[in-house]
Length: 401
Image: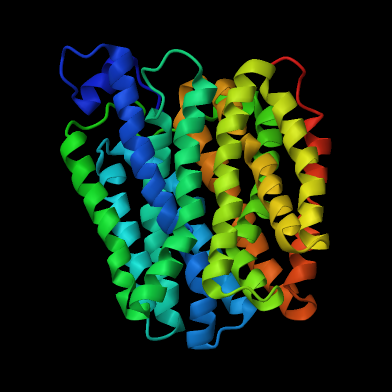
């Protein structure tokens, strides 16, 4: 499966005016895809904002709430390699164009769900819209931009992380204003973005892979690629468990209102988005290995402050912990793509989709189960020490990339 294209083919795909130089057309493509990425990931994190209300409305246990998170992770992340293969075999921008509308409609209708099976179905279908967007868009985000790939990939990645940050607060405030029956209004941005992409991406993307994956290049670098996969897996366990359970934790065990708890998650995710941008910039200057080591070890004391302190000091620890934890979002991705430059889409789906998905599918339900027995405070605190294992693993990366 091959997603990498030349600057000329990317320009033709996006059909800019002929007078535009290739580099400028690359930035136009980046802007469009980053804009769409913001809204796609806004929907991918909306379940966290809905969770306290859904738990109260349907009488869900924390295990059931965790299972919904696992379903969302499965459909939005674990299915990404499948969409990568399909979008390469059938070269059409519809995998990118329709994604915001599909994700927006089904996620925004969660407030209308009459029972738990309907919640399950809507989360599954909404996540499928999220999954269809990422492989194709990620592989094309920086095509045609020759300099500072870490910085510009960080822009694309951080736009999604910023959307994830705003999603819970957006839906919490929306439902607070219009009630659960008014949650459908959240679908409007997704429908609008689909309309914009429909007009802007009119020519099918060029694909030479026709859905075939060559395993030989992957086998040749399986050791460092496995290290990057495990690093993303560890980071994703912490990040996704926090993103999923933080509003519940703040509202149930810290006494926050539902809206304040959602804003606490937004604080954590916003600093995480900033961390992704800063990490990509630092990797261009100092190397990815060094940034990964700083991220994995540096986030630990701040996350400890969040659990051990209270008030604004605790929230400051949460914000700075998220900042450092997400330093590595663009770094692992770019380092992985450089290992197999001819299969950027495959690597993107593996590290952005499958690693995130497997982490969430396993650990979100496990964390919910542990929280039913030991409380969310202990369950999340235990998850927060995992970056120490990531730091030890990152030390095995080569000094020179």
